[in-house]
Length: 123
Image 1 (cartoon, one colour):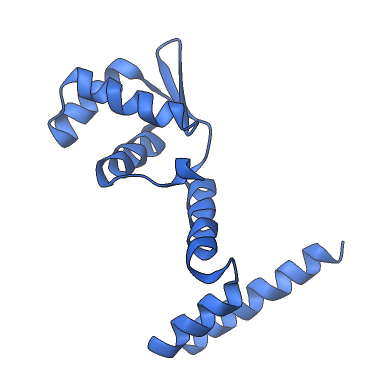
Image 2 (cartoon, helix red, strand yellow; image 1 turned 90 degrees about the vertical axis):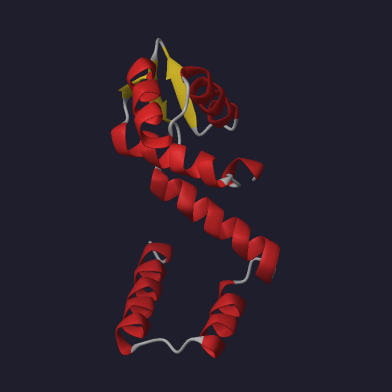
C-alpha cells in the first residue's frame, strides 16, 4: 500500500499526468518546467518514482497511467480506514458525524450508495 502514499509534489505531478495522459515524456518535462519550475532531470526522477510504484508507465517515451485517479483515491481511502479505523467504514462515519453533522442530501447520497451496493451484492 506504500504506493498510495505520495508526497505533496509527487501528488501534484501525478495529477498533471492523469490530466494529460497519454503524454510524451518530453512534453511532460516541458509541462513540469512550466508548472513547477523543474529541470528535465527532476521530472524524470519523479516520473521514475511513480513508475516504480506502478502508478504510471513510460513506454517508448509515452507516459500513461496504470492506475486511474479514481482507483488511486479509492485505494488511498481504504488505506486511511485501515490505518485509522481498523478498516471499518461505520467507525469512520461515526467519528466523522460526531464532529460534523451530515446534511439531508449527504444522508440520502449515503443511503443510495448502500442500496446500490446491496443490489450489486445480491447479483
